[in-house]
Amino acid sequence: MGTINKRRWIIGIILLLMIALLASAQTIADYYEKSKLEASVELQASLEQMASTESFKYSLKSEFMIGDRREVISEVAGEKESGNTHIKGEMVNTPIDIYYIDGTIYNYDSFADKWLVIESGTANSEDLLISELNPLANFRFKSVNEVEKIGFEEVEGQECLQVRCKPSVESQLLENLWKEFEYLFWIDYKKNYVKKAELTAVNKNNEKTRLEIQVQFTNVGKKLNIEAPETSTAKK
Image (cartoon, rainbow, N blue to C red; front, side, top):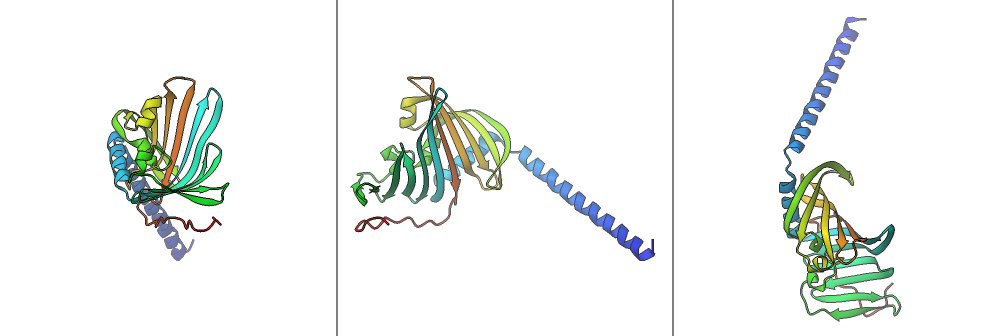
């Protein structure tokens, strides 16, 4: 082997060793960062961040499990900004397209092919008791018990911390009908927000009936510009 080739070979080996050391150092740093994460602290921080966020998009699916039979209650895609909300999808096997803008509901009637405009008498979508219009209402707690760090899993390419807990919920709609709540969160621990969440609960009157709700969040904090639909003409 010539002197020049030998020198190149040695330099190549050194470069490979440096790259391997840097990768190993990064892996160790990542492991150390993740090992320091406390489930209860990260959960609290992410829920507070979501509650203060002005805008986000989401997908929500709610189902009943009656024995071995699964029944879809709703499956919607939604967007929320500064109290205004738009959801589209299905509820109880019926297509829906609903806007909630400044206390007014715009509900598209597919049979009449027109928008129905309803003054709701409230400036808060939470008062309507429709969790599809405000998915965060499902994740407000009086207290949180049995918080457990499950591990890490990617959601849409983002590594998330998985946390399980059994809280006491604030929602009267949930509390009146359900018990034994258990939640699983996927937390973007670098940005402190909830990327994905699931809840399960048991019906108070029939323990063979269970509730399952899954929500996934995107575009958190981004400008969305939700506006009321044009109601003077039929929907296209």
